[in-house]
Image: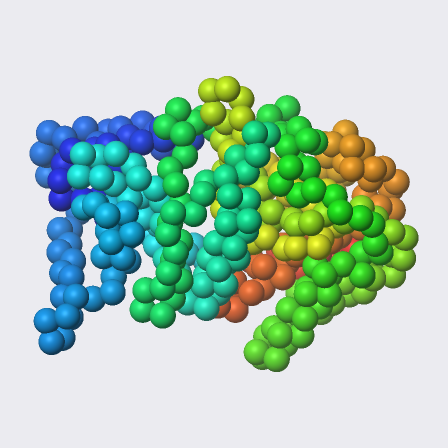
Length: 356
């Protein structure tokens, strides 16, 4: 993290949204905020960022642009991820320490594509409905040729959604994010067609290996299922407990729309929710637990009229194909050391999904 020099602003940045964080993280941030507040030396480096450019021009930095858009002085606390798909995450603060919003800045074409998608989808939602709310876009633009987006702050009293089967959103909340628009054979959906194009693109970039071949075979399996299934307007793509929270009145807030896929099979958000919980607990083994994931998802999927074993299996296979493609794309961009699984584990996961 990069914290502001102003101690009061840094402290409030560290303590904000404590209700969304696990207990261990919350206590760690509170301790760090306390150390910052009393001025104790920390194991950190002091970084001075100068807003200057050749010829005396003011550089087109993201902070300068946001300051102009908001019409006020601002400070920022910055979080830099170390994983694949990493990008700069800015908590935009007032000089009094109030959180004004959050900004993301792309670092390459992969992250740029995600930010462009998120900006478009959030603008379409425009805050969402009373059932599911989404942050509104406050500003967007480019810095050094790469896009950024700033969204409004979440409610200060928002709380995390429990990482349990019972804590999952309702069918109505899933449908508010991904409403059903019709029915089609899986191969006719835009999502499946785009996955095949992405597979071709990875091969064109020189990527090869068992996992890529297995994804191709998995997509062939899916294409052979010709019965129509419910199709949603969009798949959120990462509708998991780490991207949602509830305000005190029970309203569900949802964010991080970088992985949205339009025209996708309905129910993928439900599968992802329960697969993500199992992945957090058991890693690849949890995602491979097809029967457990489908059992957890069954009640909600019935509300989407997805009940037959063949349909459930195809939905799970579609989910695996997407997760595998994302992993391969991130590994191609950042290396296998920064993704959530190894290449051999990914191949085993796909194989298990095909055998059922």
